Length: 120
Image 1 (tube, rainbow, N blue to C red):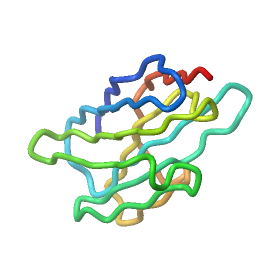
Image 2: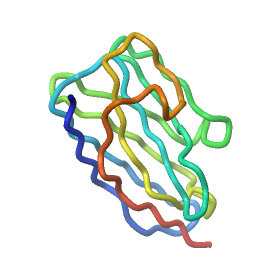
Image 3: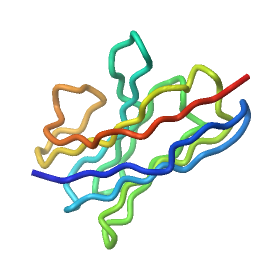
Image 4: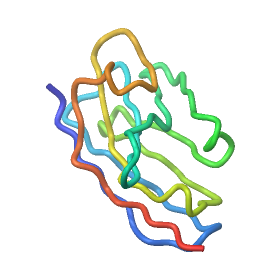
């Protein structure tokens, strides 16, 4: 099991930027960011493998960048041009399995989340 702790959330105005961090106890094959807004299902935002392959949902592509520093067992999410619709609790997730996806069902380990609030 991988222990995950997110940080870096906060409140910003639309157009602003934040960088989320996720400190992990290991560097598994696949690490991902998910988010969940009140009353909505949790959705995958981005994943990145330990080979550097990444994927994003359409609504954040070009604005968000996932990266990882395996020497520090840390996952990052750089978020630029933030919009009010990006407001959500953001979660870090990891899996040691060989399948990387943006689906909740494929992840075994989760952090407790960090809140991002974007005001208009």
